[in-house]
Image (tube, rainbow over the protein chains, first blue to last red):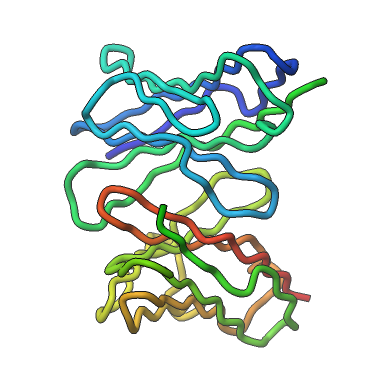
Length: 115
Length: 113
């Protein structure tokens, strides 16, 4: 079984400040890990993914995440928040095996950016 | 990246009628597609896995007869909400797999009145 816990349903930062969105996972096999962003009334867009290569993963829009196996974490960071980063962010886990590639999502974290 | 198109983006229907939502992979073939439901301010709940040429696999608690899924080709999966009721109002999102990555449609906002 696999699960994802996102700490903090709402994170608020000032423009230009560091963004840190937390994600912890549980998986009985080596996981694939993902961060998605969702803008209102839209689908999900992939920010970045970890698939057992480099533990520090760089994604789009200046975001990055580090896979820490000892902490079972995959936190998302961005050095300097921009107003356009305001959105809902979802962490997700999947197994490397299995043809169906089923994703399990966290409950999401709403990021607001204050001017 | 690959593109998944979902249509319609928004639909309003009367209680008791059926609504069909289409999900198309535009530039790749998707043997597996997924249908999710998202309630306001909540995460995505997987409803079913759609496999081309075979029956969909539904998650526990999802009514097969209410949410009909058809995956007739490698680029098209459809979700039909039958005999819709106000409690079926929600945001429905499809995704399609290409290699190790899932690509998502824009979502469909269904409102049953």
